[in-house]
Length: 250
Image 1 (cartoon, rainbow, N blue to C red):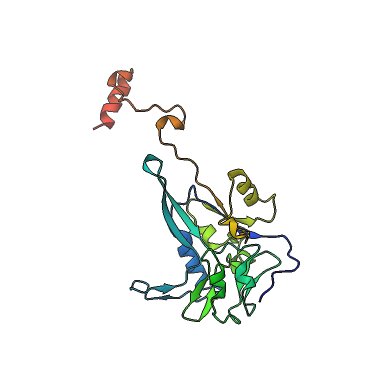
Image 2 (cartoon, helix red, strand yellow):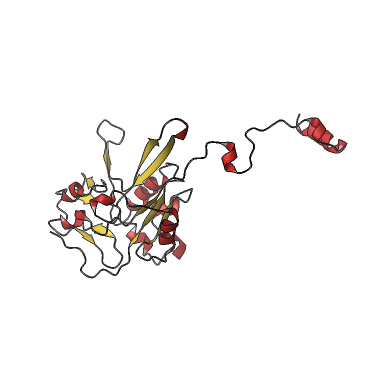
């Protein structure tokens, strides 16, 4: 079986996902697919994608849930990918060493050259983050776009995972979660970010920020009135303004 790094640096690169503002647009999943179809994990195959038995590799998947009842209900979009755990069982069960955790940044990767496709890692992962590529017979997973974040040919601002770069609402954040002073660690502390399924004991690096409570009445937004009343013509005291108002209302 594969061992975890004996002397990790303490650096833990990962993602922070804000469930409060994720709109479930799937842009992160699509851009992930596009980038990694040409990167070191290529190809990311799709077999019969529109047929009755579609088989394909997606490193990022988005699930949508209805939470609560009645006026308290809301839709929560939940992106899911590899969490790059501090204690990843997917690594320790691997019989060939193909699954491994990097000591320098905590990223969990797969060496396809020695992967035998036994799927033990997928059975050990409670998050369903492992993907079996039926075309080449090996396991694949999110790499945090390791070939992008360390690419010195790119401007520094672009050295982030594809999913982070493409999110239209800024719901995804990338950084060192092993550093308590980093921007992502401070964001987790401010918003009470949490681990997914902490009872499993795998200590996932990626964190989720919970949705904020919904505001169900106008008054909860400040001093807004419960209803808006129509404004009569008499409120426009100046005759010129009344004439402009009539012209623009035609």
